[in-house]
Length: 349
Image 1: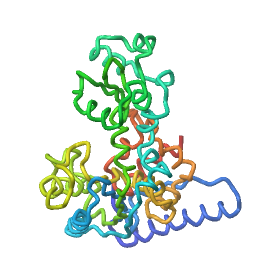
Image 2 (image 1 turned 30 degrees about the vertical axis):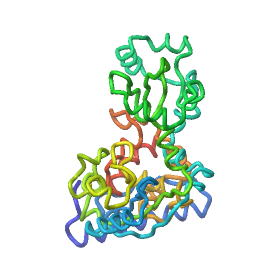
Image 3 (image 1 turned 90 degrees about the horizontal axis):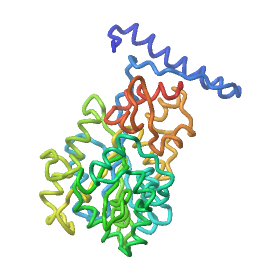
Image 4 (image 1 turned 120 degrees about the vertical axis):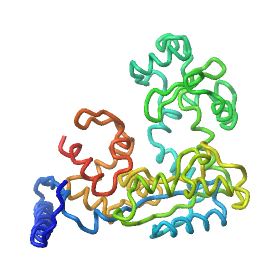
């Protein structure tokens, strides 16, 4: 998009933005319907230059040396830690923080019964190709269960289910129906999201904690995509960027006092995939409504409400233009300003 180059055009653009904000506030105080404000994408300013992320050091990696390593690598990349803290395993369990964090993934493993599942035709075809049995027939024979039901039927612990699930190969022992929606066959049962229970229990073990960090940096210095790829690193720490957190933890796990070598299932670090996810995660983990961050301010000026955030928390499937995908996939890796722009069609629909 064209950028304003001359000083008078920049000044005019800033006045336009301020005017839109003032009119929106006047309508709000007058109890009039809020007029959606389209954020002018070609007006540079502090908000669109600032990315505010949320990062967590997972419980199995929460050691003093690991926390020190996180701070050092962030500092080396010009990323400021605005605030940080710790949440105990007991608090995570009582407030169901991890279930809220994973949203639909957790619901499918814990709460959604097979009869309520909606499996797309493509997923049903993949199921038949993988297992040699039509999806409908598996349902009729009562062979489909969620992860919680599977543990009860088979008498397995979460670790036992997780260990067996980890041995399954994609396209052979398990299939993907959609984002965060998997089915694997174990002991004659077709289990939905069987990986989740062991991962969840890692956050509940007595004495463990989640260390969290609120981060900020200039988008002009580092894009969100680069932050995820080169600072956080690939999901598999063994192939992550050489200077990333996950690769550092993989190569130095003994020196960092970690209990075992990191792998895809326990890769030590979580980093929000977009400004939208970061806002959602701060709301969940920190009781932070997020109304003070730059991203929310821009999104609110564009017409977003807290109700939008609540609806988006479960990562619904959305259609924008010709693309249909999960909401978080739609905004993945976008910087603050671009993320607001990508969400605007959903505010107008």
